[in-house]
Length: 548
Ligand code: MAN
Image (cartoon, rainbow, N blue to C red; front, side):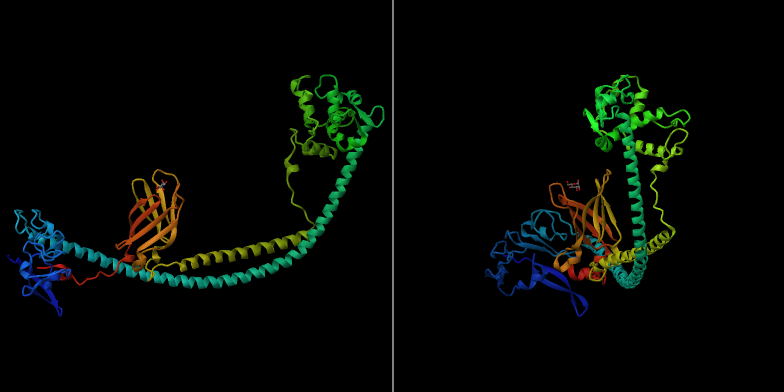
């Protein structure tokens, strides 16, 4: 049996001095376990499963259950071989790879008894790895420096916001004071205005009621007069025959008043008494009756205005040949009021001598439709103006208070957010970062929202609103959760998990959707860069990892 030893050089740091040392240990034993392999004593299996003479170590026969007696051979299926890899990082490989013809260790130590022509590449690989590590360390250091300025800026902004909040509070107090003063002035101005308006409205209502009563009496008198005129036999009843005796009611202009035509004006009854005529009959009879009467005004009086349109029934019939189907009575519904509002107004205006309101083309001028502002007497108007001015000033003061309250609330909400233990994330607020993949543009606005926008147009989809820091307990500020996004079809509401990694700029590195409607954003930012563990220089790399 032959012990397979390898001589290994080790750099040890002692009192800050680095010097080389030789450590003799069996093949495949890592430096950290060298002390367990003492050739002057029996070997104790590392799992405590037994002890064997030291000569049994690496004798190509597996004695220990954990394979620790065969670190340099492939005898134990569960053993491990350590490549010393001088110039690079030591590597542990399963012992089954020892002498299997494949080069696993960069120093070729795993293929000491095979035909594989392994070449030692550890120095080149080690140099490249050290260069890469140094580069990364520099980046990390740069990120760490940037983080410091983010902290500084974040703290500055926090202070500024605090100052601003105090300023706004003072302003709000002043604005509230002004508002209550204006409210008082408004109340004082509104009291006499209210009284004057009540008085004014009472007078107006009275005038209106009076006018209406007069109008009603006038209408009634007209109705009575017409009734008397139409009631040929003076028996107090208008009959079908009486109406048939008057061409006025020949609605379809066929030369005779049919029973149907006559009944239409009697609400489909045989006759109508004076009371019914006043309350409902006159309303239907009036347009044709008045039009007809006007046709017979004596020539000395002004003929009906050329431009004055007859009531619609008459007009249609005038324009069409007698017996025209459209004028047949079946189209007339006694429930329908043959006289519409405009016609009524027209009549009244005529009677009141307002014909001048019709222009040369016979069109009514707009004046009648204009809603006129109520005209108050001078004193009431003055009170209304004063109250209006006071209301306007109060509204302005009220708006001022509301604006300040809104601004204050939004600032206070910002202050309540957790921008990291050292305010390092605060400056990200108000900025948005984008990432594009084949199909979508993703936008992350830290402490606000995450958005997905299809490149093919359409609207944006809300993936989530700022929720909380969601990293593990030991590293809470490494992940952000944006939740309560738009509901997913037949699924949960969308959410975005944002993982933060150290980088020299804040940017989105990738966005994926590992589960439907659950998005994973990876964002680099200096805000999470910690101080590199060993920033003293390249040697540090060798101190901890290299065996020469
Ligand atoms: C949209 C996008 C996708 C999502 C589906 C779910 O197409 O928001 O990311 O997976 O909806 O229906």
